[in-house]
Length: 270
Image 1: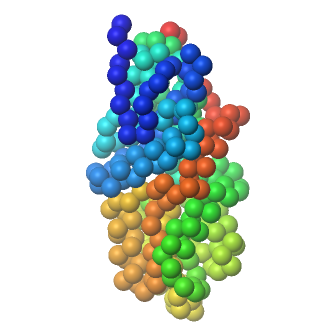
Image 2: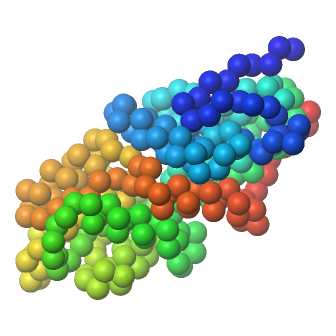
Image 3: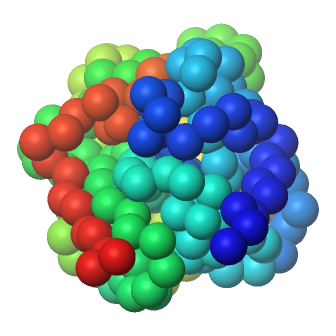
């Protein structure tokens, strides 16, 4: 069988890990109809590749953008790789992490050449303590907005109906507020209250005169746009950009790649 040719904006395939190279890293984003989101994922893949020379890095998406993770993993197996590391570009361990990603890996490893796939933890907190790099990236983006002094912060997230996932967002807000020394409240763009404008208004009503918004998003898109518009209309002094390819996020991705005990593997029968 002829090996499939792989192309990626992040790296060029130089040889299978079976020949001594590093196992490929496959980044899996949620996906969006907004082309800015896909470009942000590609930029992160390029940054991860640059930070880890010799490691092939591929971008993939669960929806809206091609290729999907199943296609990337199958092509890697055909190209001669026998193992890969899949990093979910997700900030909560909700439905996509529990259902969609395992299904994509299972589909990729049902037949064809044998491939062992290790799926890492998501980028958001998996226990009571958010990753320091994640918090540093949020602080970086907030600082880039140059809001000056602010009295309170809203951590605006995409939203989920999963109560455990919402609790993990709350832990990030608590930790971020603690580091900044100001109250930090959670808001959501969908699926759960409060909305960003409501959260900003509540903080202002409680006495916070200058409220900034920290964007708990990996990429720009309609959700971030809606949060920014509503927050500014409610009187927010600044709205941070998404994390995209912040250096701290790149380092967090690589920590997930290297953090073997918390991942799991799925292998083909060959």
